[in-house]
Image (cartoon, rainbow, N blue to C red; front, side):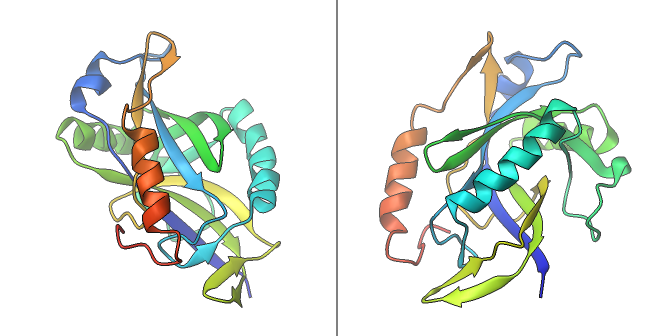
Amino acid sequence: MRIPLIETRIISISSQSLTEGRKNENGNPMVETILSTVEIKNGNGRYYSKELWDREINKYAQLVKERRALGELDHPDSQIINLKNVSHNITKIWWDGDKIMGILEILPTPSGNILKALIESGIKVGVSSRGMGSLKQVGEVLEVQDDFDLLGWDVVSQPSNPNSWMNQLNEGQIQIDPYHKINNIITDILCSNGSCPVN
C-alpha cells in the first residue's frame, strides 16, 4: 500500500547572509541546502536507494527547468501543490556524493514572506521531501520501494535528520559552510550503526 513518505532535514541560514547574499534577477533571495541524503538509514528508519533517487531526480529536473519545482511552507494535506501556500521554488538540483543538493528561491508570496521573516529572526527550519510510496521491512530498516513518486520539498518546523545547512549564494558562487563536510562526516560516523543519536 502506498502511503505519504515525508523526510525532514534541519537547515540554517543567517539573516545577514539573507539580506547581503545574492539575489536572482527578480530580487528574490537564493539559498542552498542539502535536500536529501541517500543510502543511509534516516531519522525515520527509512532507506532510499541511489537508483530510486536518480530516477526521481531525473523526472524532477523537468519541473526545475520549467520553473514549476514549487514547495510549500508546511506540508499540505493533499498530494497537490497548493499555490496559496507556496513559499519557494527550486531553481537547481544536483548530486554531491550521496547528497542531493538544491538552490531555493524564496518567493515574495505570503508564505515566502513568512519564511523570510523566520530566517531573519534566526529561526531554524527544516527542508522536507514529500512523496508517495510503499515500504518493506529489510532487517532494521524500512526500504522504500520502486513505486515511490517524489512530489517535491517543503519547508517545515520539525526536523528529523541533522546537518543540512542552507547557505546563501554570494557573487554567483556556491558558498558552502566551512564546517559542512566535517559535520556530515561526524554525522555519518555516529549514524553508521543504524541508529542516529544526533536526531
